[in-house]
Image (cartoon, rainbow, N blue to C red; front, side, top):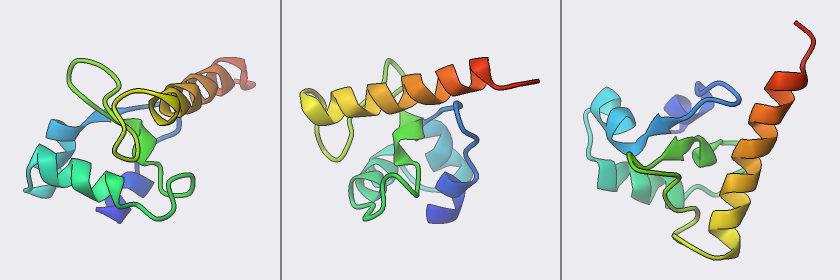
Length: 85
């Protein structure tokens, strides 16, 4: 799964379900793998989102960790928008 996360482009997201289908797994297994990620800033598990919203981060669906996930995604998108073409 780590390889699949590393292939996710900056500023783009994939749902847990879509990544699970790509890996021949389940959305819950993808979520568990993201939660167990020991290098979350280097292996971008924050780019994996729920079908109806951002989903959790490091096992938290609300609070500071979930807010950090939203912050990371916003920064990536903002960096893409301001990058020279």
